[in-house]
Image (tube, rainbow, N blue to C red; front, side):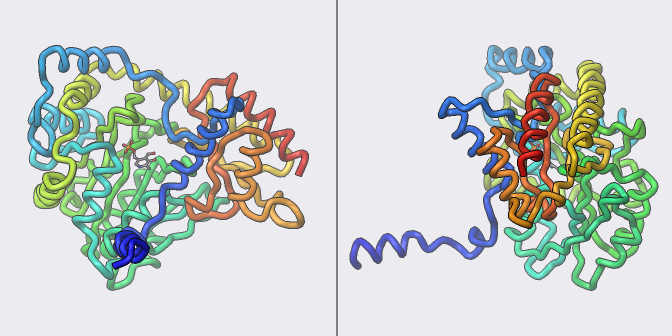
Length: 400
Ligand SMILES: Cc1ncc(COP(=O)(O)O)c(C=O)c1O
């Protein structure tokens, strides 16, 4: 074999990996970082993470864990102490009744979703996915061999999802429905009534529901809700949670799943052959977060509401831009369709690229979330940064 053919041979990657794409949000972060490394002052509305520091008592618990040599392997799905803390927090806040064996801790909410989808979705299975969707759902479904079935939602109705809409998308091959409320990127919140109608429908049809509740504490409607509290459908529901946004812990990597013991046990088996346990030190920090004072969560939520109102008012004041009012999470999803085509940017991707390169504001184009007419603006930042970014955006849009 020549060196050239050997190299080609080595590069023959699996069909499985070729089914997926890199995360578009990560791509924006990388491009903004590149500009910053050239000394350019970029206003970053791209990042999907809190701007707050991790609360002190959580950091202290991690430091104590290191000092106390809590630095060895733990049980794959997390220590009993952590699993009990996850169950306790959820029961206290949402009235659920999970047991330790119905819980798992993994390396971030994304890891929980990856394990869950690989365990539940087989080749040929269909997965109903409301649009706009968080970038990774589609790729994890594809990686598992499943087919995403996109459920279009109406922007005029605030990107709402109802049982009636879901029912129309069900086929004999439907295996799973993925819900994400509050949603990334739209900030839409599905009402408790609609959520219950969807999970009851799914249970009647023998379909699984994964409820991604990574933003469940960042709900601005005043009516926080988890489907984990719908006890008569528990056998078909997997709740996915994360400490990333709730406690400003994105870099620590701690997420959890709550669901039927056989599914949790299968997820644990998969985890035992990949990452093993989440970092032991992080587990101690997570216990402090879940069992410690919760005022920090409320304080951050109050600040996000203030920032949301500020950024949405700012975006709506830009001629040609419209924006639904997000009810949760920390993203605004303005519609920029009036600027596309006719000699202007061809697509949201094109527009976001130009906004970054010409005006140095990082946003994420809607294509990665399944819509072509939007950009995602993360408002998890200071009012000063919001003002700087909004000013630049105003000038940029006026120039198109
Ligand atoms: C909807 C949604 N689910 C899951 C995640 C994963 O978060 P993490 O893996 O940090 O817990 C994110 C992160 O942005 C998200 O937006």
